[in-house]
Image (tube, rainbow, N blue to C red; front, side, top):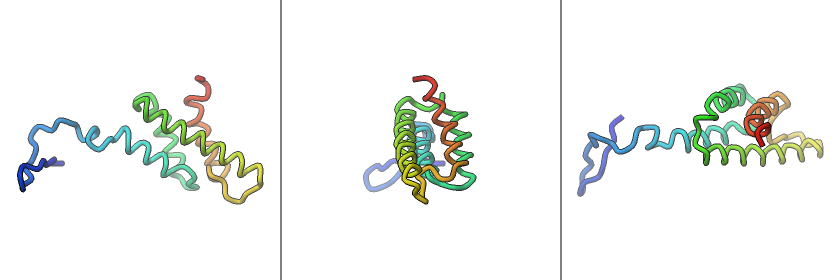
Length: 113
């Protein structure tokens, strides 16, 4: 991938970018949060894939990213608990099998606090 910078009215290739591709796109930040938010509430194989990835990469994610994922997950668990108590057909964490996958992710911080 080539990066460009604007110089006057033209764009010129950057030969020595200041950031790696991962840093420039915020791979460990933006993409991890976006993937997590996309997968929350899904009822497909992607939930298990996302949970597996998060469990594998959790220690490598920056602390601020872990905090956001933890907050979002806890909020969805609260919403899911309320929906299950009411007997709603729609559950924010998906089916029981999906909720179990998110419980694996939740265990990353639940047992440590």
